[in-house]
Length: 240
Image 1 (cartoon, rainbow, N blue to C red):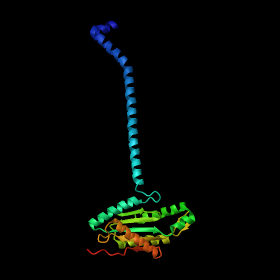
Image 2: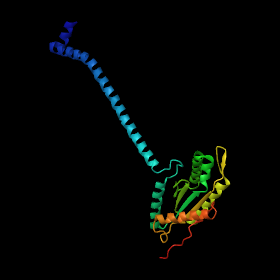
Image 3: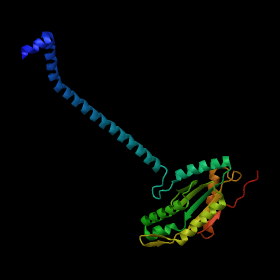
Image 4: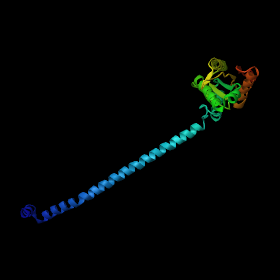
């Protein structure tokens, strides 16, 4: 058989064929090892790539969380004072430029200290959260911003809204709170609020602080007149 093989291919060709067969036999295990190495490298590369993706996503999540925490009050989940100040400042600038109406409401929960003294701070915090949820439901539309600006003090920036409509909405909120007391852990809390309203006027408010003082003054007047009411800023714009 060997003789026929060499006769068929010739000595030179036969040697070449035998050599190629031998090399193929030797290379087969080497190729298997190489392919296994490549496969392992690809798996490891994919794992490292996925790990980088996961790390990038975690960093983005942490950045988003930090951004949210810097703008949101942790107790009530409304905007915090910093976010409130930024939005009010921007809204005032826009209202001055465009002439669009802008109303600021400041709200103070009446006699809130009695809740903490009678029922403890945990229930007091729950009460503030409940009031905040109602504020969000009543003032959560486009152009509205509800914020916690102090202990039991809240601010509402109402862009594109004149004071008459804003006062009407504030009165509806006040009346609803009286009609539907807050109930927590079986405890009925008949809460009331004092609200002050001021509409931005370039002829009256030199800056955002003047607008805030006007609304704050209206809150104090609401408290002085007996609480559980809405009062509006009564100052008239300065003549041009």
